Amino acid sequence: MKIGFLFVGQGSQTVGMGQDVYQNYSSSKELFDSVTLDFDIKDVCFNGPKEKLDQTYYTQPSLLVTSLAIANALNEEGVHAEYVAGLSLGEYSALTYAGCISVNDAVQLVSQRGEIISNALPSNMSGMAAVLSDQLETINEVIKSVESENLGCLEIANYNSPSQTVISGESKALEHAISLLKDRKIRCIPLSVSGAFHTSLLNKASQELNQVLNHYEFKQPKCTVIFNISGDIETDIKTALTRQICSSVQWVKTIKKMRDRGVDCFIEIGPKNSLQKLVKQIIPDAKVFSVDSKETIKQMIGELYG
Image 1 (cartoon, one colour):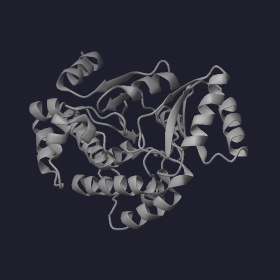
Image 2 (tube, rainbow, N blue to C red; image 1 turned 135 degrees about the vertical axis):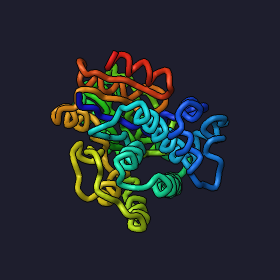
Image 3 (cartoon, rainbow, N blue to C red; image 1 turned 30 degrees about the vertical axis):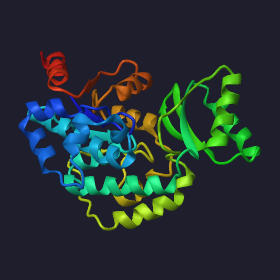
């Protein structure tokens, strides 16, 4: 069996995350206790409040540490990944799991990344929406229509599955696109995010991030990492991460690449189970599990090896 770990991105956070593995696995507890930040990451993850956990500055390092703590718990149970990928922010968790960067360096890096993104996208000026449709051609037509009216930036941020595409851009453009799509009987769900991630609005921010990335050392991965920007293996990690925040997330290609390379069991790591649903939409017969606690890990092991 070839196992792939999938690490969740921003939006998956929930108060209480990580507490179960912290209490039940020594390696998870050790990881949480080892993290040095200017706030108590255990308190924010375990107790919130939600309003604080949802702030990008707290969300990004909290999700990274929680995800890695769950991965540690899996390793403690003898479950290891040959392939890893992460959705947006989750890519940093994947790279850390793969040994490319230390946990504390990754925590500091995503904190800086979150600050750069927050500063680049003023509140309530831009946003994102999930388009629940397989009509990609229609979605692209609507984007072109909005562009022609000079309402601002609007781009595809995520190719999440054959039936879910995320559009991202400035508020007026996004609102008009949602209206046009609804006229075409296509359902859209505005996302609770602070701005238009994965668009050209973050081109300048990506260069700021590149300067930050140059202060960190990245090692060769111990397992295979599939990257957001291409849905493939990348040899230049810093360039891939620089481009990632202003480029579309190629999640469909990522999952298909992992399958083509022989991955026959996908394990979503993190709170909620959004990635599990996406994988099933991409590969309906895929074996997919979502774990975030001792109970869900034991249940998965029972189904796999019982």
